[in-house]
Length: 282
Length: 345
Image 1 (cartoon, rainbow over the protein chains, first blue to last red):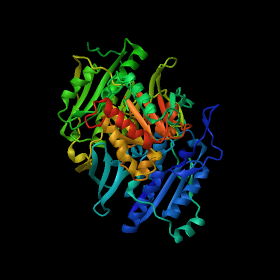
Image 2: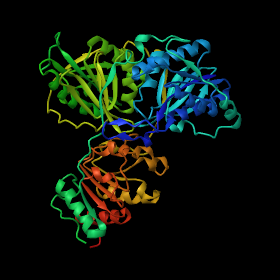
Image 3: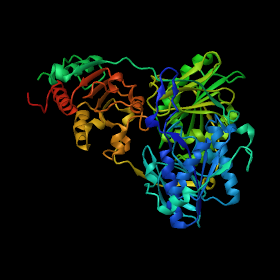
Image 4: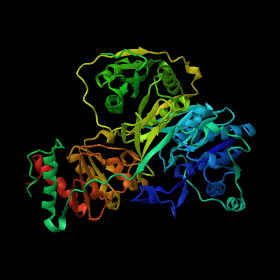
């Protein structure tokens, strides 16, 4: 049983600060984390390993600093961490990124067959949700996005039953293996890392793959060259003009509320409020 | 009325999403945007066309014509009765290769996101997710797709200069719903799928339907609560206000993370984008991640005890006060206005 988990180190977007003059991200001092959905993907992989034996390989594309994210994954129970890093990969969009990840998985697969591929449903910095599905298309494996539960998993029969959340409810799918799942947080709850993992992680050095070695990537498919999209411009959302403020402390509760209802009625936006209303009489 | 395809025909495509024979309204929103883009791009040669997949779904094409498609490409096959990534992606990708649209818009729904990335990868083109604005760059004559990034803290305009089609997804309710024509004719082009059921590696065993069909995205009135509620006990109060106004309950992310309410009520960057006529934000501070999901409302009433709360920056009217006093008073006065059936005067 061999699971490959793809992760991304991202800025903690709940803590992002924007330079109001330039409209760009202030990166200095911005904390980085493993994309939260990816942590749950890894947890799922570790739980399957505990049940069926085998190993968990984690890979990431990113700057050299992303090695620390892989060490965290070893703490959580991964066996092997691969950092794909090279300046030539810079400015990759989702198409170029899915190429790099898919090509790396093919190289891993050549060493050791892969039964399952797990990705977070999306990364919180870009929120595109495109890389996982893109990798599935490139590898020509079944895709199950927005997975919330693995109901049954049979590595010998090469079949799995997976629940995914869709707009109408929960869809229960049977798939052949290997398959690629992009997961929601419910897929598996995070546990505290056990001590032996922490000890192993303390001395762990992730493997580093460049654009040329040990598995050369197609130069035309990576980085800027491999990316059909570019950022034309970036800007902070323009602020809207704030509306009037009514203070309950100044005008009293009933008057504050009747003022609001009169404004809503005057705007004519709600059929359940008569447009001529002046606010409810106390 | 149908434009005859010529060498210069510039196709703007919209994926017509349907499930169980019911079209998703985002498809019509996208057709509205596509018509505007066609006029901006090249009024003479640009055409708006729909792409429809499913089983026995041809009647939906008629609706697409009424929303502005001059032509619909239909792949109707039992294998496509339920959405699955592989047959849908393979079918649409082949249409793209045959007809070479210049722009291709897809709804950023669960289905649309799953599908669009697979198509973009297969045809090796650029895809911009969750756009909030689509225009034609006047100088380069290409699609300028603007989207929030870094959790809504930054907006980026994305261009796809060389490869075609230029693909983009847009969430439901981000674009306005166009008025359909009373009658319209268009051309229906049927294409084969050429895929047998045995070739599809995934099958649906069952569907567990959601207990409640909450249609937050298309609600006219939303009463939403945030961290200021202090606990789950305040939610029934907001539900009562929502009911009085004929609306539904929304929440900001912390309430879902705390497990007080299910994720289908969540408004914002990681929840739903909504565009109600009235949005009441009670006890919501108004972080940018929430605002990007609701700032398209026609009228926003914010209730917060903190006059500095960022939610007041997007509100049309703000009440500075305790929501546990303001909400009951709102319910009382709304009922009084409506005739006060169950209200003691």
